[in-house]
Image 1: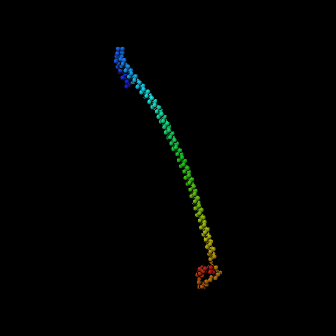
Image 2: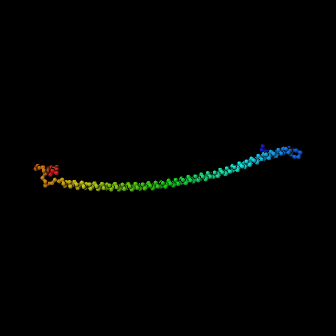
Image 3: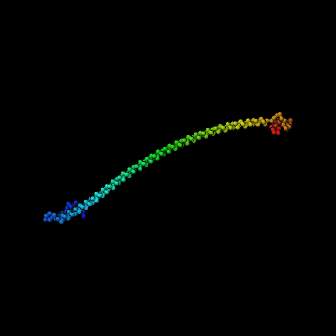
Length: 180
């Protein structure tokens, strides 16, 4: 049974011959001592609980600080990774652009080489045609020279005298040269 300070202040002890009633006074003091002892133990338990809770609070604050530091480190690491990835992306992009330029330059030079080859082939074709024509012309001239009737040889076929000279020439041209 807990006695509050207000109850102690308002407690009225009975009077006896030499002062207060001893039994009532001792009962009140016993009640006060018991109440004080309960309060004392309760206070001690509460003090222990406060110390335990303060220890937990300190531990939780340390964990919070550790978590905050870890989170900040993770954010920094993520930012560093993003920056490194961005740098690598930029580097790969630059390399790809350089390679593309090289391929374009190489393709353009190959195109110019092919165009030059085509021009050379066209020139060679024209020259070959010209030399072929010249060769054919020379061959035809030689052939014509070989196939012209020899006027010193008499034809195997007797030509009638009544034929005019153009008709005779025509008949001579029809006569095979091998038969002559």
